[in-house]
Length: 441
Image 1 (spheres, rainbow, N blue to C red):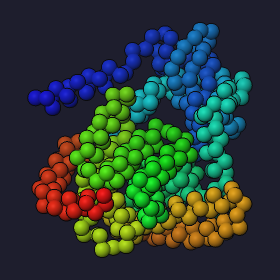
Image 2 (cartoon, helix red, strand yellow; image 1 turned 90 degrees about the vertical axis):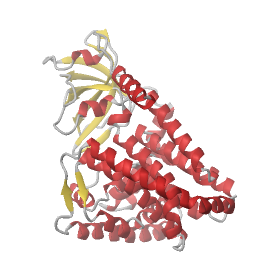
Image 3 (cartoon, rainbow, N blue to C red; image 1 turned 60 degrees about the vertical axis):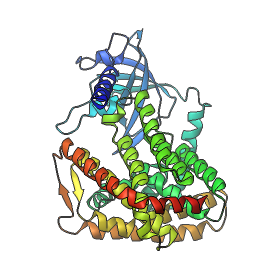
Image 4 (cartoon, rainbow, N blue to C red; image 1 turned 180 degrees about the vertical axis):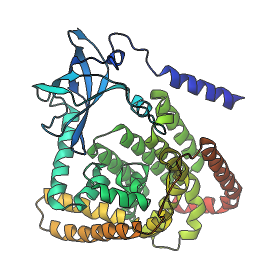
């Protein structure tokens, strides 16, 4: 009964999070089949995709009166606009589209966006309002890093590095994206819980000789710095919080406390933004991958502890994240890569190496150190192996299977079965868990 009550309360909160538009909100004027003139300020870093730029603006005036609300605007590739620019848009407001298997309206609603405008006439009023605020500094640093990466690495290597370090996938050629999709490796090109866990693994390995407290603080600092450099997008912030919680659990060695903290953090995130529970795929993936790491690392660790530390930890992270995220990927995207397990085993060990050496090359370049050419050369070799290898694997016939209607109840059954298996195995690991905690204390 408490569970049913909780579900009812949750759905009521989600329903109440959708606003009722009045004439002071831009959502009131969607689909009116007439042009409007809106004065707005760009409130996020514009994203370039397929020769167009997508910007999110906060409306200030519509025609001659004050309005509020955010709008997603699709503009031509040039001229380029920046965060803080004040512009005037002349065009038609519309509701986000609804597709048969995907609700774009719900996807944007989680970020409080209920209106879109495509290819309006644009007039720049002034540049960079409030250009000295914190967000301007973050976006400036992100652009500097992007430009330096593009100088260091030729395409398509630069696109891969941008995806791994900054979560910028827009410049990746479509042919290469198709290869990664068929190989079941697209998850490595977007900042998510998986990338954060890789980062944690790298830092933990590099600092293995230091004390637990030093490694704990250093790992949290690196997670914060990584989130800052990627622009502190909502999905990255959520993945970073989940990753920071995982670090806490690993260093504390107290699985029960970690579960409580994870559930509490998820509850607070949903309380602040209820719509992420249903429509934010990145939140779902970050949450279940962190849950998987907490539940499955203890199960798998006895079997891989004889492997080298770096390979063993990476394999644990991969197995745990993959097992727990597969049904969500099937439900939302309807595709399953048959060769994904093989491709992940072969190519995932390259990802932390590429992240590590590209970071070393980037830092060396900013510091004008001659060793940049060494790091660049090593990283380029790994990039070439990854790109050519993924392309070769993607050519295997029937590599990608389409499952257009993976039902929600199948997702539920999958997790019920998985949790039952974990529950049946957990008591057998009690003695090992206790000895492990004593060993790390």
